[in-house]
Image (cartoon, rainbow, N blue to C red; front, top):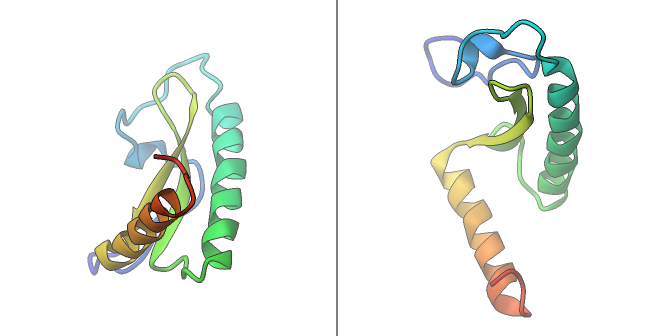
Length: 98
């Protein structure tokens, strides 16, 4: 990632950029990351289908300290606000999540 803040981090398994910053011997991070990657890919396809650009908002696969897969959202505030607007409209519209 460059100092400009405009580049996205690599989609690879990146524990250096994680909250814990180290690997624990014997923990299967790859399996957790693989499951998170599949979920992140599915969400990214849905975002594309809804008209979002992945350069503006996207799901990123990661793991936590015990190797469990985690999907994090990363994006520019404007795009995240647009996504929130869309989700709120869906929830309010026809008896959705609320």
